[in-house]
Image (cartoon, rainbow, N blue to C red; front, top):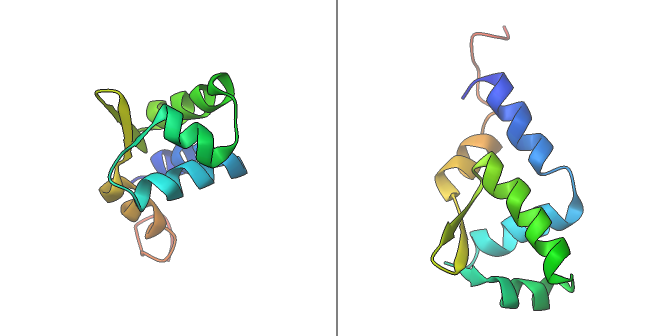
Amino acid sequence: MHKDEASKLFASLGDPNRVKIVKMLYHNSTLSVERLSQIMELSSLELKSHLNILCEAGLVKKQNEDYCCDKELLDTLLSFIPTRCGCCS
């Protein structure tokens, strides 16, 4: 993962509601908008706005009418900081 991609992904998590959404999806296979709305206590409009940001970043994907987390991408992102690369010594 390149630092620019990591930065974009970290930025998409720059809201406590989006962090919670990703965490909920990480620990559940899929969740519907209705179920996420109940858990998050957000309006459908507000929730969909957060989901759009996460989908654009690639951390969340829509499967039919449900949403899921891209666990592989999230695991890669979370290991980015402790992993050595060419940009630091």
